[in-house]
Image (tube, rainbow, N blue to C red; front, side):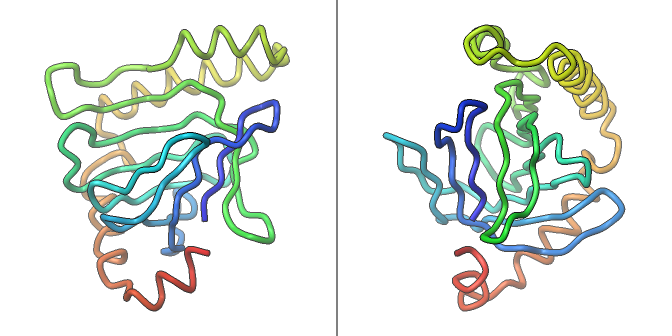
Length: 174
């Protein structure tokens, strides 16, 4: 289970995932098509297989979908993203870097939510400056298709995810 929350502790998205392994970029988890994702008031199932990178510094979760009809990459800029005793956790910090498959392309999303929550939750100035710079850097790296935001890196992890059996997934996803 990957459990996101907001800065004030409120629950946010929870996704069923399975641990896939690690590489030079960090740890990777996967979600198969049809697996559950939910947040308060919203239930959903994954529309395609997805792999998510969690870097060692815990500053984001970068999800790549293999066949989503709208989204190729969705990076949740975060805080304290990593493993606890029960699975994967993180604080969703509102800013997202998105790569859509249509003409809208690549952009930083939810800037309005970032501004609102920055005031409401009182994000510390050093956190604000660090994460704004990170979002801009991630947007640049996605636009340039730099690893690990390239198709070849994601495809290596999709191969691992596709090998996961239903029994392994049930045990690992929590």
